[in-house]
Image 1: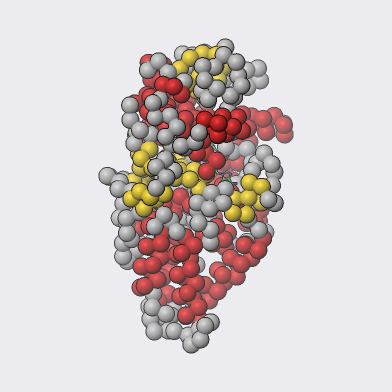
Image 2: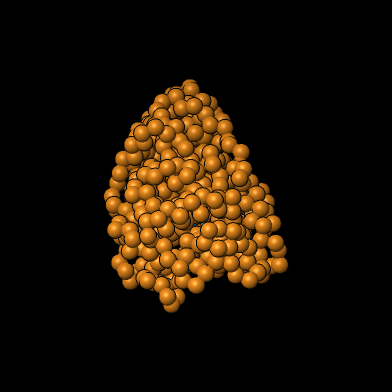
Length: 411
Ligand code: 5CA
Ligand code: ZN
Protein backbone atom coordinates (compact mmCIF):
# COMPACT_ATOMS: atom_id res chain seq x y z
CA UNK A 1 0.00 0.00 0.00
CA UNK A 2 1.08 3.57 -0.55
CA UNK A 3 2.04 5.51 2.59
CA UNK A 4 1.58 9.25 2.85
CA UNK A 5 4.00 11.98 1.73
CA UNK A 6 6.91 12.75 4.01
CA UNK A 7 7.21 16.22 5.51
CA UNK A 8 10.55 17.98 5.23
CA UNK A 9 12.97 16.94 7.95
CA UNK A 10 15.66 19.51 8.75
CA UNK A 11 19.06 18.21 9.80
CA UNK A 12 19.77 18.98 13.45
CA UNK A 13 22.84 21.05 14.32
CA UNK A 14 23.53 18.84 17.37
CA UNK A 15 22.63 15.26 18.17
CA UNK A 16 20.25 14.21 20.93
CA UNK A 17 20.81 11.68 23.72
CA UNK A 18 19.93 7.97 23.42
CA UNK A 19 16.22 7.32 23.89
CA UNK A 20 14.85 5.88 27.12
CA UNK A 21 11.32 4.45 27.00
CA UNK A 22 8.81 3.06 29.43
CA UNK A 23 8.32 -0.63 28.60
CA UNK A 24 4.90 -2.13 29.33
CA UNK A 25 6.28 -5.67 29.59
CA UNK A 26 8.93 -5.00 32.23
CA UNK A 27 7.08 -2.05 33.77
CA UNK A 28 10.36 -0.12 33.83
CA UNK A 29 12.44 2.27 31.81
CA UNK A 30 14.62 0.81 29.09
CA UNK A 31 17.31 2.50 27.03
CA UNK A 32 16.64 1.47 23.47
CA UNK A 33 19.89 0.41 21.80
CA UNK A 34 19.13 -0.34 18.18
CA UNK A 35 21.84 -2.37 16.41
CA UNK A 36 21.50 -1.16 12.86
CA UNK A 37 18.35 0.78 11.95
CA UNK A 38 15.88 1.21 14.81
CA UNK A 39 12.89 -1.00 13.97
CA UNK A 40 9.46 0.31 14.91
CA UNK A 41 5.98 -1.12 14.38
CA UNK A 42 2.94 0.97 15.23
CA UNK A 43 -0.49 -0.62 14.92
CA UNK A 44 -2.44 1.20 12.23
CA UNK A 45 -6.10 2.09 11.81
CA UNK A 46 -9.11 -0.01 11.03
CA UNK A 47 -10.37 2.28 8.28
CA UNK A 48 -14.13 2.48 8.70
CA UNK A 49 -14.35 6.06 9.95
CA UNK A 50 -12.25 9.22 9.91
CA UNK A 51 -9.13 9.76 12.05
CA UNK A 52 -10.12 11.10 15.45
CA UNK A 53 -8.02 12.95 18.00
CA UNK A 54 -7.35 9.70 19.90
CA UNK A 55 -5.78 8.09 16.83
CA UNK A 56 -3.84 11.28 16.08
CA UNK A 57 -2.52 11.31 19.65
CA UNK A 58 -1.14 7.79 19.27
CA UNK A 59 0.53 8.43 15.89
CA UNK A 60 1.98 11.77 16.99
CA UNK A 61 3.34 10.10 20.15
CA UNK A 62 5.32 7.50 18.22
CA UNK A 63 6.29 10.06 15.61
CA UNK A 64 8.21 11.65 18.50
CA UNK A 65 10.02 8.34 18.98
CA UNK A 66 10.87 8.17 15.28
CA UNK A 67 12.22 11.72 15.49
CA UNK A 68 14.08 11.18 18.80
CA UNK A 69 15.86 8.15 17.35
CA UNK A 70 16.85 10.17 14.29
CA UNK A 71 18.03 13.01 16.57
CA UNK A 72 20.23 10.44 18.34
CA UNK A 73 21.75 9.48 15.00
CA UNK A 74 19.86 6.28 14.19
CA UNK A 75 18.27 5.32 10.94
CA UNK A 76 14.67 4.25 11.49
CA UNK A 77 12.76 1.45 9.81
CA UNK A 78 9.11 2.15 10.55
CA UNK A 79 6.30 -0.23 9.57
CA UNK A 80 2.57 0.26 10.02
CA UNK A 81 -0.44 -1.84 9.05
CA UNK A 82 -3.97 -1.06 7.92
CA UNK A 83 -6.60 -3.50 9.17
CA UNK A 84 -8.46 -3.32 5.88
CA UNK A 85 -10.57 -6.39 6.53
CA UNK A 86 -12.04 -7.10 9.97
CA UNK A 87 -15.41 -7.34 11.72
CA UNK A 88 -15.89 -3.62 12.60
CA UNK A 89 -15.13 -2.54 9.02
CA UNK A 90 -17.48 -5.13 7.49
CA UNK A 91 -20.22 -4.29 10.01
CA UNK A 92 -20.00 -0.55 9.29
CA UNK A 93 -19.95 -1.09 5.50
CA UNK A 94 -23.02 -3.29 5.84
CA UNK A 95 -24.82 -0.78 8.05
CA UNK A 96 -24.29 2.18 5.73
CA UNK A 97 -24.70 0.15 2.53
CA UNK A 98 -21.24 0.88 1.13
CA UNK A 99 -18.85 -1.62 -0.41
CA UNK A 100 -16.30 -2.51 2.31
CA UNK A 101 -13.33 -2.14 -0.07
CA UNK A 102 -14.46 1.34 -1.06
CA UNK A 103 -15.04 2.36 2.55
CA UNK A 104 -11.58 1.15 3.57
CA UNK A 105 -9.89 2.92 0.66
CA UNK A 106 -11.72 6.16 1.30
CA UNK A 107 -10.98 6.26 5.02
CA UNK A 108 -7.35 5.21 4.51
CA UNK A 109 -6.92 8.07 2.05
CA UNK A 110 -8.40 10.52 4.55
CA UNK A 111 -6.03 9.16 7.21
CA UNK A 112 -3.07 9.80 4.88
CA UNK A 113 -4.16 13.41 4.44
CA UNK A 114 -4.56 13.84 8.21
CA UNK A 115 -1.10 12.39 8.88
CA UNK A 116 0.43 14.67 6.26
CA UNK A 117 -1.26 17.71 7.77
CA UNK A 118 0.02 16.76 11.23
CA UNK A 119 3.54 16.24 9.82
CA UNK A 120 3.76 12.64 10.98
CA UNK A 121 6.71 10.90 9.30
CA UNK A 122 5.38 8.08 7.10
CA UNK A 123 6.28 4.42 7.56
CA UNK A 124 8.66 2.93 5.02
CA UNK A 125 6.24 0.01 4.66
CA UNK A 126 2.51 0.74 4.92
CA UNK A 127 0.89 -2.65 4.68
CA UNK A 128 -2.73 -3.75 4.39
CA UNK A 129 -4.15 -6.95 5.89
CA UNK A 130 -5.65 -8.05 2.57
CA UNK A 131 -2.38 -7.78 0.65
CA UNK A 132 -0.68 -9.67 3.51
CA UNK A 133 -2.87 -12.77 3.39
CA UNK A 134 -0.04 -14.94 1.95
CA UNK A 135 2.16 -13.84 4.89
CA UNK A 136 -0.61 -14.68 7.33
CA UNK A 137 -1.07 -18.13 5.80
CA UNK A 138 2.66 -18.79 6.03
CA UNK A 139 2.75 -17.82 9.70
CA UNK A 140 -0.29 -19.96 10.51
CA UNK A 141 1.49 -22.89 8.84
CA UNK A 142 4.46 -22.34 11.12
CA UNK A 143 2.14 -22.27 14.12
CA UNK A 144 0.52 -25.46 12.86
CA UNK A 145 3.94 -27.11 12.54
CA UNK A 146 4.56 -26.17 16.17
CA UNK A 147 1.30 -27.89 17.13
CA UNK A 148 -0.25 -24.70 18.46
CA UNK A 149 -3.41 -24.37 16.36
CA UNK A 150 -6.64 -26.34 16.38
CA UNK A 151 -9.98 -26.21 14.66
CA UNK A 152 -13.37 -25.24 16.07
CA UNK A 153 -15.93 -25.80 13.30
CA UNK A 154 -14.54 -23.90 10.28
CA UNK A 155 -12.25 -21.62 12.33
CA UNK A 156 -8.62 -22.05 13.41
CA UNK A 157 -7.55 -21.07 16.92
CA UNK A 158 -4.16 -20.37 18.48
CA UNK A 159 -3.61 -22.16 21.75
CA UNK A 160 -2.19 -19.69 24.28
CA UNK A 161 -0.90 -22.65 26.32
CA UNK A 162 1.69 -23.23 23.56
CA UNK A 163 3.51 -20.03 24.60
CA UNK A 164 5.34 -20.37 27.91
CA UNK A 165 5.81 -16.58 27.92
CA UNK A 166 2.08 -15.89 27.49
CA UNK A 167 1.09 -13.01 29.79
CA UNK A 168 4.54 -11.46 30.02
CA UNK A 169 3.74 -8.53 27.74
CA UNK A 170 0.65 -7.27 29.59
CA UNK A 171 1.30 -8.81 33.03
CA UNK A 172 -2.46 -8.94 33.62
CA UNK A 173 -4.03 -11.55 35.87
CA UNK A 174 -6.32 -14.09 34.29
CA UNK A 175 -9.51 -12.40 35.42
CA UNK A 176 -8.46 -9.12 33.76
CA UNK A 177 -7.41 -10.99 30.62
CA UNK A 178 -10.80 -12.70 30.40
CA UNK A 179 -12.68 -9.43 30.82
CA UNK A 180 -10.57 -7.51 28.26
CA UNK A 181 -10.61 -10.38 25.79
CA UNK A 182 -14.43 -10.30 25.82
CA UNK A 183 -14.51 -6.50 25.50
CA UNK A 184 -11.94 -6.25 22.71
CA UNK A 185 -13.04 -8.57 19.96
CA UNK A 186 -12.39 -11.96 21.62
CA UNK A 187 -14.86 -14.79 22.16
CA UNK A 188 -14.16 -16.24 25.63
CA UNK A 189 -17.51 -18.02 25.77
CA UNK A 190 -17.33 -19.95 22.52
CA UNK A 191 -17.84 -23.68 23.18
CA UNK A 192 -15.19 -26.08 21.87
CA UNK A 193 -12.14 -23.95 22.72
CA UNK A 194 -9.33 -25.45 24.80
CA UNK A 195 -8.85 -22.21 26.71
CA UNK A 196 -11.36 -19.30 26.71
CA UNK A 197 -8.41 -17.00 25.87
CA UNK A 198 -7.43 -18.84 22.68
CA UNK A 199 -7.81 -16.47 19.71
CA UNK A 200 -8.85 -16.93 16.09
CA UNK A 201 -6.03 -16.98 13.55
CA UNK A 202 -8.16 -17.94 10.53
CA UNK A 203 -11.88 -17.23 10.40
CA UNK A 204 -13.65 -19.63 8.06
CA UNK A 205 -15.94 -18.16 5.42
CA UNK A 206 -19.37 -16.91 6.53
CA UNK A 207 -22.29 -16.04 4.26
CA UNK A 208 -21.96 -12.53 2.87
CA UNK A 209 -18.41 -12.03 4.12
CA UNK A 210 -15.29 -11.79 1.93
CA UNK A 211 -13.07 -14.89 1.94
CA UNK A 212 -9.75 -15.98 0.45
CA UNK A 213 -8.53 -19.48 -0.36
CA UNK A 214 -6.10 -21.08 2.01
CA UNK A 215 -4.83 -24.53 2.98
CA UNK A 216 -7.25 -24.27 5.93
CA UNK A 217 -10.26 -23.61 3.71
CA UNK A 218 -11.70 -20.30 2.50
CA UNK A 219 -11.73 -17.54 5.09
CA UNK A 220 -9.91 -14.45 6.33
CA UNK A 221 -7.17 -13.59 8.84
CA UNK A 222 -7.74 -13.08 12.53
CA UNK A 223 -6.72 -9.67 13.84
CA UNK A 224 -3.64 -10.55 15.90
CA UNK A 225 -2.03 -12.81 13.32
CA UNK A 226 -2.27 -9.91 10.87
CA UNK A 227 0.09 -7.67 12.85
CA UNK A 228 2.29 -10.59 13.88
CA UNK A 229 2.81 -11.60 10.22
CA UNK A 230 3.32 -8.06 8.92
CA UNK A 231 5.80 -7.09 11.65
CA UNK A 232 7.72 -10.37 11.43
CA UNK A 233 8.02 -10.16 7.65
CA UNK A 234 8.91 -6.51 7.37
CA UNK A 235 10.98 -6.07 10.55
CA UNK A 236 12.05 -9.54 11.66
CA UNK A 237 11.68 -10.95 15.17
CA UNK A 238 12.92 -9.13 18.28
CA UNK A 239 12.53 -5.74 16.63
CA UNK A 240 13.07 -2.65 18.76
CA UNK A 241 9.64 -1.27 19.63
CA UNK A 242 6.04 -2.41 19.25
CA UNK A 243 3.66 0.49 19.83
CA UNK A 244 0.01 1.45 19.84
CA UNK A 245 -2.66 2.80 22.14
CA UNK A 246 -3.04 1.25 25.60
CA UNK A 247 -6.24 -0.48 24.46
CA UNK A 248 -3.93 -2.79 22.51
CA UNK A 249 -1.90 -4.01 25.51
CA UNK A 250 -4.26 -6.97 25.80
CA UNK A 251 -5.22 -9.04 23.94
CA UNK A 252 -3.71 -7.61 20.76
CA UNK A 253 -0.03 -7.21 21.58
CA UNK A 254 0.02 -10.20 23.91
CA UNK A 255 -1.34 -12.44 21.15
CA UNK A 256 1.04 -11.00 18.53
CA UNK A 257 3.90 -11.75 20.93
CA UNK A 258 2.56 -15.28 21.49
CA UNK A 259 2.26 -16.04 17.77
CA UNK A 260 5.81 -14.95 17.01
CA UNK A 261 7.29 -16.58 20.11
CA UNK A 262 5.75 -19.96 19.22
CA UNK A 263 6.46 -19.76 15.47
CA UNK A 264 10.08 -18.60 15.71
CA UNK A 265 11.29 -19.29 19.24
CA UNK A 266 12.23 -15.62 19.41
CA UNK A 267 10.54 -12.72 21.13
CA UNK A 268 8.27 -10.43 19.10
CA UNK A 269 9.54 -7.00 20.17
CA UNK A 270 12.20 -5.92 22.64
CA UNK A 271 10.09 -3.11 24.07
CA UNK A 272 6.31 -2.58 24.14
CA UNK A 273 5.17 0.96 24.55
CA UNK A 274 1.65 2.30 24.76
CA UNK A 275 0.00 5.68 24.43
CA UNK A 276 -2.77 6.74 26.82
CA UNK A 277 -6.39 6.99 25.79
CA UNK A 278 -7.96 10.28 24.85
CA UNK A 279 -11.50 10.74 26.12
CA UNK A 280 -14.26 13.08 25.01
CA UNK A 281 -17.55 13.72 26.79
CA UNK A 282 -16.33 11.67 29.73
CA UNK A 283 -15.55 8.45 27.86
CA UNK A 284 -12.76 7.01 25.73
CA UNK A 285 -13.07 8.48 22.25
CA UNK A 286 -14.13 5.53 20.15
CA UNK A 287 -15.76 4.81 16.86
CA UNK A 288 -18.20 2.44 18.51
CA UNK A 289 -19.37 5.07 21.07
CA UNK A 290 -19.44 7.85 18.47
CA UNK A 291 -17.97 10.54 20.82
CA UNK A 292 -15.50 11.69 18.24
CA UNK A 293 -13.57 14.78 17.24
CA UNK A 294 -12.22 14.26 13.74
CA UNK A 295 -8.89 15.70 12.64
CA UNK A 296 -10.36 16.32 9.18
CA UNK A 297 -13.32 18.24 10.66
CA UNK A 298 -10.94 20.54 12.54
CA UNK A 299 -8.88 21.02 9.39
CA UNK A 300 -12.03 21.82 7.44
CA UNK A 301 -12.85 24.53 9.97
CA UNK A 302 -9.53 26.24 9.22
CA UNK A 303 -7.74 25.07 12.35
CA UNK A 304 -3.98 25.11 11.78
CA UNK A 305 -2.80 21.47 12.01
CA UNK A 306 0.23 22.73 13.94
CA UNK A 307 -2.15 23.91 16.68
CA UNK A 308 -3.77 20.44 16.75
CA UNK A 309 -0.32 18.91 17.02
CA UNK A 310 0.72 21.28 19.82
CA UNK A 311 -2.53 20.54 21.72
CA UNK A 312 -1.55 16.85 21.65
CA UNK A 313 2.08 17.52 22.62
CA UNK A 314 0.92 19.31 25.76
CA UNK A 315 0.02 15.89 27.24
CA UNK A 316 2.49 13.17 28.10
CA UNK A 317 1.94 10.32 25.66
CA UNK A 318 1.37 7.77 28.42
CA UNK A 319 -1.30 9.74 30.25
CA UNK A 320 -5.03 9.38 29.70
CA UNK A 321 -6.66 12.75 29.19
CA UNK A 322 -9.82 14.37 27.97
CA UNK A 323 -9.95 16.49 24.85
CA UNK A 324 -11.77 19.81 25.20
CA UNK A 325 -12.17 22.81 22.91
CA UNK A 326 -10.24 24.82 25.50
CA UNK A 327 -7.12 22.69 24.81
CA UNK A 328 -7.40 23.48 21.14
CA UNK A 329 -7.95 27.24 21.54
CA UNK A 330 -5.06 27.51 23.96
CA UNK A 331 -2.83 25.77 21.43
CA UNK A 332 -4.04 28.12 18.67
CA UNK A 333 -3.01 31.08 20.85
CA UNK A 334 0.31 29.47 21.78
CA UNK A 335 1.23 28.81 18.14
CA UNK A 336 0.50 32.46 17.36
CA UNK A 337 2.65 33.59 20.31
CA UNK A 338 5.52 31.23 19.40
CA UNK A 339 5.42 32.51 15.82
CA UNK A 340 5.47 36.10 17.05
CA UNK A 341 8.63 35.45 19.09
CA UNK A 342 10.32 33.46 16.31
CA UNK A 343 9.57 36.20 13.79
CA UNK A 344 11.80 38.59 15.76
CA UNK A 345 14.92 36.72 14.71
CA UNK A 346 16.94 37.63 17.80
CA UNK A 347 15.82 36.27 21.15
CA UNK A 348 16.82 34.64 24.40
CA UNK A 349 19.74 32.18 24.07
CA UNK A 350 18.58 29.22 21.96
CA UNK A 351 21.30 26.63 22.61
CA UNK A 352 20.10 25.70 26.14
CA UNK A 353 16.53 25.37 24.82
CA UNK A 354 17.70 22.99 22.10
CA UNK A 355 19.58 20.90 24.66
CA UNK A 356 16.63 20.76 27.08
CA UNK A 357 14.16 19.96 24.29
CA UNK A 358 16.20 17.03 22.95
CA UNK A 359 16.87 15.74 26.47
CA UNK A 360 13.16 15.87 27.32
CA UNK A 361 12.15 13.96 24.19
CA UNK A 362 14.82 11.29 24.73
CA UNK A 363 13.48 10.91 28.29
CA UNK A 364 10.43 8.76 27.48
CA UNK A 365 9.14 11.27 24.92
CA UNK A 366 8.41 14.00 27.45
CA UNK A 367 6.75 16.47 25.10
CA UNK A 368 5.15 18.57 27.88
CA UNK A 369 8.66 19.23 29.27
CA UNK A 370 9.97 20.00 25.78
CA UNK A 371 7.16 22.44 24.99
CA UNK A 372 7.53 24.10 28.42
CA UNK A 373 11.15 24.87 27.51
CA UNK A 374 9.92 26.62 24.36
CA UNK A 375 7.30 28.53 26.37
CA UNK A 376 10.02 29.84 28.67
CA UNK A 377 12.11 30.95 25.68
CA UNK A 378 9.08 32.68 24.12
CA UNK A 379 8.30 34.53 27.37
CA UNK A 380 11.92 35.63 27.75
CA UNK A 381 12.13 36.71 24.12
CA UNK A 382 8.89 38.68 24.16
CA UNK A 383 9.64 40.11 27.58
CA UNK A 384 6.35 38.81 29.02
CA UNK A 385 7.88 38.47 32.49
CA UNK A 386 10.03 41.62 32.37
CA UNK A 387 12.65 42.84 29.92
CA UNK A 388 12.79 41.20 26.49
CA UNK A 389 15.98 39.17 26.04
CA UNK A 390 17.40 39.52 22.53
CA UNK A 391 20.95 38.54 23.43
CA UNK A 392 21.09 35.69 20.88
CA UNK A 393 20.97 37.19 17.38
CA UNK A 394 20.63 33.72 15.80
CA UNK A 395 17.92 32.45 18.17
CA UNK A 396 15.12 31.89 15.65
CA UNK A 397 17.44 30.46 13.00
CA UNK A 398 18.69 27.98 15.60
CA UNK A 399 15.30 27.04 17.03
CA UNK A 400 13.07 26.78 13.96
CA UNK A 401 14.69 23.65 12.45
CA UNK A 402 14.82 21.98 15.87
CA UNK A 403 11.12 22.58 16.54
CA UNK A 404 10.43 21.09 13.12
CA UNK A 405 12.78 18.10 13.29
CA UNK A 406 12.25 17.09 16.92
CA UNK A 407 8.65 18.14 17.65
CA UNK A 408 7.24 18.07 14.12
CA UNK A 409 6.14 21.71 14.47
CA UNK A 410 6.87 23.74 11.34
CA UNK A 411 6.26 27.33 12.43
N1 5CA B 1 -6.29 -1.72 13.47
C1 5CA B 1 -6.18 -1.88 14.90
C2 5CA B 1 -4.74 -2.02 15.33
S1 5CA B 1 -3.92 -3.30 14.48
C3 5CA B 1 -6.82 -0.73 15.65
O1 5CA B 1 -6.81 -0.75 16.87
N2 5CA B 1 -7.35 0.24 14.89
S2 5CA B 1 -8.10 1.54 15.49
O2 5CA B 1 -8.47 2.30 14.33
O3 5CA B 1 -9.13 1.14 16.37
O4 5CA B 1 -7.05 2.33 16.31
C4 5CA B 1 -5.88 2.84 15.70
C5 5CA B 1 -4.86 3.26 16.75
O5 5CA B 1 -5.38 4.33 17.55
C6 5CA B 1 -4.51 2.14 17.74
O6 5CA B 1 -3.13 2.21 18.06
C7 5CA B 1 -5.35 2.47 18.96
O7 5CA B 1 -4.74 1.99 20.14
C8 5CA B 1 -5.38 3.99 18.93
N3 5CA B 1 -6.57 4.56 19.55
C9 5CA B 1 -7.86 4.24 19.31
N4 5CA B 1 -8.70 4.98 20.08
C10 5CA B 1 -7.90 5.81 20.82
C11 5CA B 1 -8.15 6.83 21.79
N5 5CA B 1 -9.39 7.17 22.16
N6 5CA B 1 -7.09 7.47 22.33
C12 5CA B 1 -5.83 7.15 21.95
N7 5CA B 1 -5.53 6.20 21.03
C13 5CA B 1 -6.54 5.53 20.47
ZN1 ZN C 1 -2.05 -4.27 15.35
